[in-house]
Image (cartoon, rainbow, N blue to C red):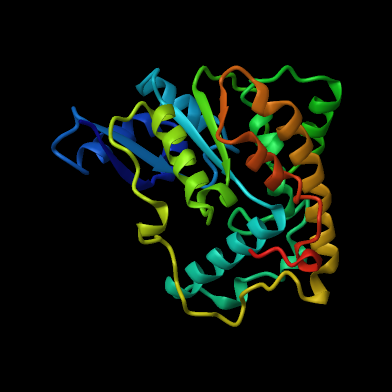
Length: 269
């Protein structure tokens, strides 16, 4: 039987020699490298595609798993994660910016409304033929450098609603599809039974509650970004040959909420 081991967050994969840094990192994780498959993660891995280029130098059999979520939920969660990190590392709290300033031209620790355009991340992989409108939209986002970086890696895309699905039958189907995608013999355990990492129950004063009235404009901007992203992902990307989605109806149902205000619909983050 096979085993899967998480290598944890490894953003050094973006370095010029990230492929050379990754191999000893993984070998330090376990002595049994022959019968294990490793997973690493980094919040910027899909946005800055040099990481994928580095992975291609190591193996032709790498599989990409891409998780997406409602842009307003993503922004609040990621901002609060960075706030938590600032506290835990005893960094200067005065450096924490007002969320309203993190627009299309400004970012803080990779938090910005511009980074909520998940479709632009995915367009870089050239899994779908891009038209003039697609290319223009990519270039209009000035906050980070875009690169068309074709990859032969297969991509499994999911929404956080699928990962946290309370419908046990549907979640079991999701786990089975993910197992098949990765070519594993051993089934995944119920995700609800696995302790969450990076979870902190302490509430810091700087935490963002995006439903407060002072963030209405910020939320509106994220909803506009969400409409664009969800349309392209749901009508083009998931139908590409190398892209796999589990339970398309559930996936599309989650995408359909991205242009709706969760603070008015009662959608839980």
